[in-house]
Amino acid sequence: MKTRTRRKKKTRIGSSLVLLALWLAPAICADKKKAGEAQPYGQIGVTVFREPGFALPGAEVTLTANPETSADPQKLKKLQGTVDARGEVVFRVPVSAMRYLIRAQSKGFIPQEKAILMEGERRSDATFLLAPESK
Image (spheres, helix red, strand yellow):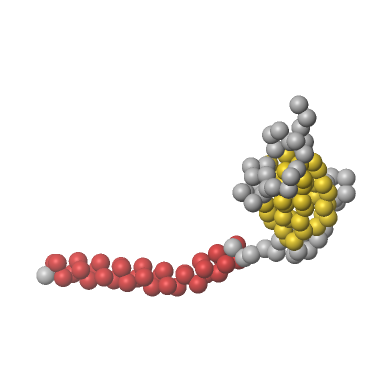
């Protein structure tokens, strides 16, 4: 008889935990949705070519907020990326109006910089044609 009593206690505790989990589940899911909501963003696409017009894979691209024109350059940390085999890389940026400075560089090529103004949920593209360094 003792075994039946133990089983009933375990069943009561288990069912209580299940009910508690079902009761708390909507609150937990709602918090995760709020934290994981997609924030609006803009995109800056960068393409890097070498002089004859071919993609330059492996080039390094740096994106920084331009402190001379931006009201709050601290909003965005310096972003870095490496272009893919097609010579492209894309950065996500906040939707607030801000001017960015883009720098493209690769070993054996002269680095270049360009400024771009971003505002809202749109995509802006910058293209670089890097010339080889003279030896």
